[in-house]
Image (cartoon, rainbow, N blue to C red; front, top):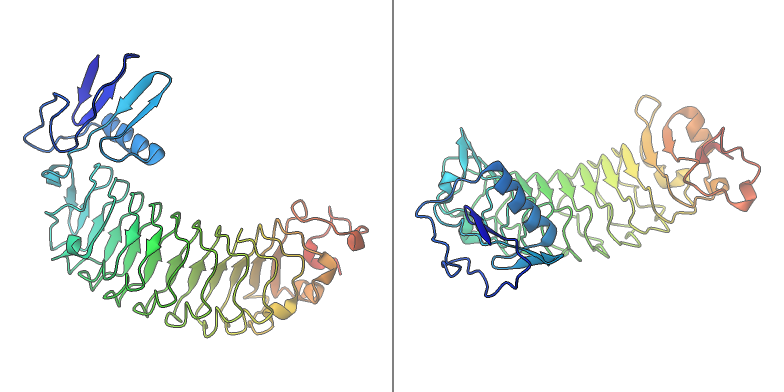
Length: 360
């Protein structure tokens, strides 16, 4: 028994399914629509769910418990019916497109293509869109960023590619976007960042690389982006951090290294970070940390440095200077006693009354 709704085909019987669905022709016996279909909310939700959770490609299927759910997508034809224009914003969210639409209004400044099934992007996809300042391609299936991919949008200041399948970023992927201020590449499969990846983005202020597979960082990775204010590197299997990674980073205010497998922090890592306000080091393997790590960061009770240290095996009695700093109110230590292990030399500490920071 076959039921159809727009271009999504559901096959429900326990009988054997034969053949396969062609995303470009009607080989299933279902006539193609002359115009782009208008998807109901239910169909949009089902499309998004199966694509995102089962990582569909066109003409693939998922079979479970003798029930097959099969899908074919022909949304690349006349997608304008599915997208909406709202002033200077074009919204193509949850439309099921698998390529960048060819009929985008060249006058828009914001393009919302998030939560679709776009598998690749190239420089030619953005020809004529010179006014774009904000691009959201989050929640798609993009696998690679090639050289000059965004260079047709020289005014762009914000790019989000969070939650894709990106595993490769070319050294010159950001060439031609000198005004880029925000880049979000979180929740991908990136294993390494080329040393000169940020050489063409001197105005970058916010960088999110959370939840990737990055194992190491080149010491000079940020040497051309010294205006960075926020760097999020959490949930990457780094293991270690180069001592000169943050050289000349006087504008940096927030750094997240949560759950990066760190067992040691170079004592001079933060020496140039004179405006640093918050450091997240939760969920690592740190056993020792001292106030000497932060000696070059100006701080007062009115403008303290906030450290988050929960879920580390910190040896509280090695945290030299912590007691004085805590008493002065210039460092706020977030070290949940319930998460940190109490080492043998600190067994007399009443963890119900004190934190890991003031046990000296």
